[in-house]
Length: 321
Image (cartoon, rainbow, N blue to C red; front, side):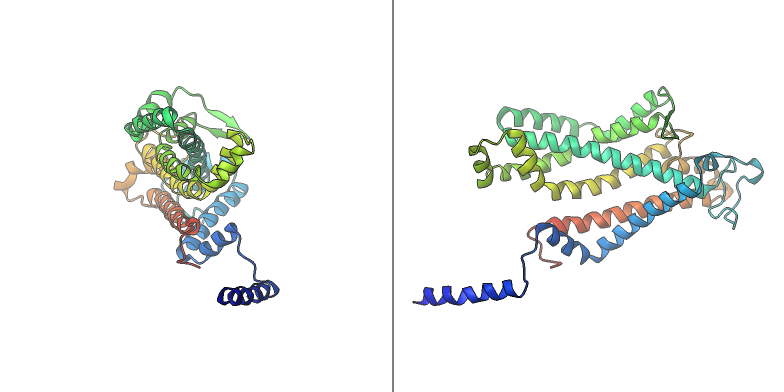
């Protein structure tokens, strides 16, 4: 009798919720709800959007030729109304160089992360899905790659190959050949941690009932992998991508600061700081302060946003509900 009473009492409640328009939130709505209640993550997202808008609008207003044009009569000028961020040792406007340098720094970070995510997802997912000797071989390969010092490899390859690759012109932009070397090396040496995370997640997912049901219905391995497994690891991949973007931009900055990364005529925030180091003793503070400020702002914004995305994609998180 008690069970019948409970069951009859529960029906009106469900009907009332439906009548009142209370619908369950979709996973995407839950992620957005958690993310928008994470104040620091919103600050990071606003910071990234502001920097991207600044670079896009700046590149529309300022042609690339103006960013690369030197004027020896106006070299080493401190910030003024005419040159808001001052000029460098050859009279180039630092603000214009930051706009075009930001394009290259962000492009390197985004393309390197896309390469990292592609390789890490495929290797980690394949190892988890097939298991056995496939898993053993791929994981031993991953561990071997982890033993290679990526920064050292990047420095060596940039030194050996960077000067031999001709300058490229794409869509009217001039790119140093070393840009491609930096992107490929960062992408090929940073996928291992993501591969291990994806593998551990997919090992648990492949035992789920819906995967067994898909197999019994004749779904191919490729369909199961890309339709069921990859979408359910999307949260991990997105979070790893945001943090990987910060790491890629910072790695490019160190190598370019050492003079072994992206070479002239292409500007990046890192090689702008490298060019400024000879003039620190001359109190030309604007030549290194502004590029380093943009690097710090981007890294901080990406990390704050990544922290918020990590909490937002966590299905067990109730912190911001």
